[in-house]
Image (cartoon, rainbow, N blue to C red; front, side, top):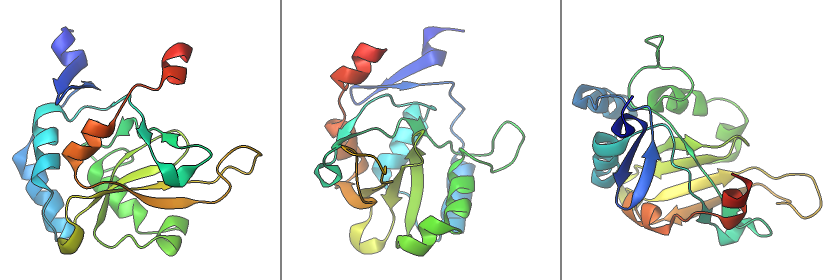
Amino acid sequence: MSQEELSRWYRGRLAGGPFRTFDPGECTALERELGLPLSPAYRSFLAAAGGERLDYSVRLPACEPEPIQSFDSLYQLGSDDAGEYGWGTLLGEYRRSRDGWLAENVPLTGLLPIAGNGGSDVLFLDLNPATHGQLHAFVHAIAWPGYLGDHVFTKVAYDFDAYLDSLFIDPDTAEDA
């Protein structure tokens, strides 16, 4: 496997693979089901570097005392290896997000889950006309002293490119790696 197949640079950020061939028909099918268009910045990212990993952190002041968060597992455009829209696919995550606890507690209308992490925190792309392209995050509380005491739903960035520009390598994570 070549280095290109393992990683790709996009706007100064290294996305990890494996990578799938971008299929505009899958974008159209996703937008049809959502009833809303993807933002141009996010669509460009999917076309150029829509891998499975984006190992960076973002600072979310609303999440004090844990302002450094990561949404490193990217959801994939199209079906999974079994040919289904399962976990980890954009359409599968969108469909699943409409049921359960999160949908009962967070206004998800027009929000597309695009990434997550091992703690069930989710990064959403806002497709609503008035706030089209913005990114929001839901971060779960951890019932332990010194950690986030309440669930947080917060705006992350004005658009996907601004989100990418705000990402950084967390020194503590880098040291652990």
